[in-house]
Amino acid sequence: MPPDLAEAGARFIPSERRDHTALAHVTGDGADLLVDAVCFTEGDARLLIPHLTDVTSTVMLSSKAVYVDAAGNHVNSDVAPSFDAPITEGDPTMDPGGGDYDSREGYGANKVAAENALLDSGHPVTVIRASKVHGEGAGRPREWMFVKRVIDKRPAVFLAHAGQGGDHTTAAVNTAALVECVSSRPGVRILNSADPDAPNARQIAQTIARHLGHQWDEVLLDETAPEGLGAHPWDFRPPVVLSTDASLELGYEPVGTYAATIGHQIDWLLDTAASGADPVAHDPFFSHFLDYRLEDRPLNS
Image (cartoon, rainbow, N blue to C red; front, side):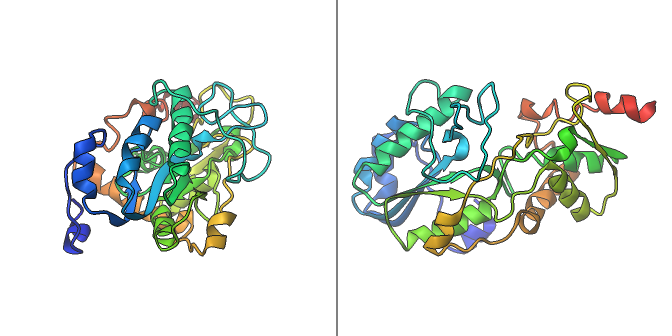
């Protein structure tokens, strides 16, 4: 339980999300606001619906992974999507589906099915579709690939496609501000959540280096670079960008830009590393991005 929340009077009630009786115990006599951060399937949604009668405003946290481009590709497809303009809430999504929600094809399809069930429930539910989430305690802190390079005193940062690829970032504090906004404006709606800026990979690397007072040579690679050299998690071209116009029109005010909000995660990563722990030891996702062998060849030649 974060100390600041405990000091503010928050309570932690352990419960099983997929148990009807446990949900009834948690929701009790209702609530002004219910935020569901673990609603992954239509089954999850339908289990929750009977408990929303006395909830003034409900928020389901979803994902921009539900969106598809004109060819039907999404961010988890084998073929990368190509979005020619900022994605709006009314743009096409994957068809609702089931199966394994923890798979590349199943994640977005299950999210759509869960969204539909809640939006059609007759209760005031806001679906929030976030993008690449960052913040202190993030489950997958993608910026670690650059923070670790600073810690290891790497003399250069290699960026595929000149670092122009982008995948819209979403500060957790900006999503929290959006949740606060909709909590006082109950309704049935879908809203995107993303930072007011949309930095590309080069700008992200520069922001992190600047925050840490580090200088390195930027090696901006072109299409002739060896496969894998300069790889990073934001490499969508054209960049994937979410429109947040609908949120702003509702009265939402973002806490800050990516550069203004990412510092909390960077400092948390540094503190974690300084304690001797590896903040991503549980996640094989990072092994490819932290393999320096491809970089060492041109550096040593």
